Amino acid sequence: QVTLVESGGGLVQAGGSLRLSCAASGHVSNIDAMGWFRQAPGKQRELVARISTSGDTTDLADSVKGRFTISGDSAKNTIFLQMNNLKPEDTAVYYCNAIWIGYNFWGRGTQVTVSS
Image (cartoon, rainbow, N blue to C red):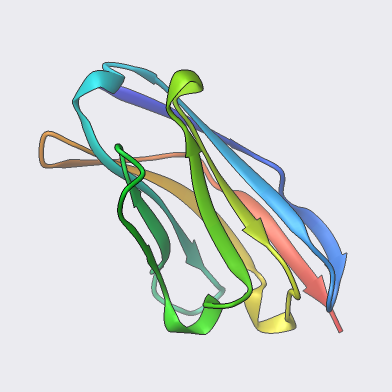
C-alpha cells in the first residue's frame, strides 16, 4: 500500500502562486503514476495534472495549461504542482493521487483558496 501526504496549500490573491508537494511512502516501487485532482464545493473531483513515475509523460487539464506545471523527484518519491497566475476558480481542495497496481490511493487533501 501507499500513503500520500500533501503540503503547500493556502490563501493567495488572484495572480499569485503556490507550490504543492506530495510525498509518497510505503510500497512506492509499484506506483505507476501520480497526480493531482481537485474538488470545489458542489462539484465533482477533477484531474488537474498527472505524471508518470519515469517523469517522461505529463498530462494537464486544459483549464490549467500554461499556468500549472507538474514535476517529480523520484529520489524523494515526491511530486510537485507549481501553480502560477492563480484564479478564483482554482479554489478547491487539492488531492494527491497515486495509481498503484491498478488501485487508486489518495491523500487527505490540501485547501487552496484564491481571493479576487
